[in-house]
Length: 508
Image (tube, rainbow, N blue to C red; front, side, top):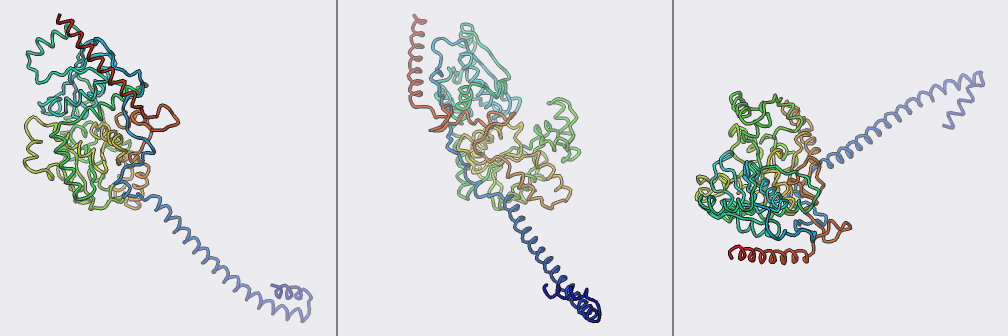
């Protein structure tokens, strides 16, 4: 640059020297243009390299952030020091002594898990009213044919013992009709009674009294234990699946009643749509429902293929073992085949159990036994995934039960957020499909402790009322002491003595 400046000064002096210098300047200027050109090209190349490197790094970071570590999902979510506990925490929670206000009878309608919710609420209502609860009656005709009743599916003795500190239970055991016309009728006239039917979802989900909520958990997660034959069949399925490795339980709520209720019809044939419309007219309120509109607000269930696409996008291998906990799919095998193409290792109770074991489930009048076995397997699975969780009492109960059972992993797809992505995929726009799915799924809840988000049901997420910490800055979160349970036991013994004395006085 110094040489360039010297020649530049001399060029202003004029004369021959100026002419010679001008020629030299042209040469220098020409060289300068070439030099600057080379610098520009080099700079451009350098900038391009930097941009390319930055893009690669940034793209890698974005891609890495959108990845989901599937290996972590096979284990339970972190508890952050919380543990399941539905024991009462207040010494004030004592079973009222003396005479009850009367008897409470309920008929629980709906399917197995809707009835389960009704039983939980019935126990709580009986507690609130200080009424003796007669063993709940299960509806056996409106939903399916099951003649076994409460005692045919649940362990009655365990149910009574588990709730002895909470409510008085008066179960008739294999009673004949004459029992109801004599003994029961006499008691009803003497004490009075209330009969609630149908009894399902008749109590508010959110209750300010946490002891009431914990009673619901004691019923749902402790007192309602299936009979030994149900547990035995479920355990056999789990053992046979585990012998092949980890497994995911998938609940496909894809039956006629739910599809007709949701109004999601467009994916079916004209004949199938007519069946669904007819079912809706007979069982639900008449409304004009637009399929895509319902889908965009998350009201349509995921199809079996969509569930498979989501799992594949998350990174699950096609060798993953999946247990199907579901009834007959509406639309037949054509929907299931697309899931099977993505994940060939599909199992259900029919493919795992032996013929003689299946005969127990398929016995006449035991329609609720199969769903009970599926519930047991899904509770113990490494991962649970529903394709639809509202309204679906099976899925909702399991989400809460698995949370209580040790924060076990659940995959709960955000159908509303996924809808536009899946709709674009149907049109053939598959660019960035898997990454977009992963982005949505990374923001979903996999089963750790978190507050309920209204209008989320209590049975889906009973945290924090039914959990505690051994040590906590908040006294309300601390686990109950053993002295409280001793107090309940002593009070129960006292109540039993009072009842014996009362019976003797009446007999005299």
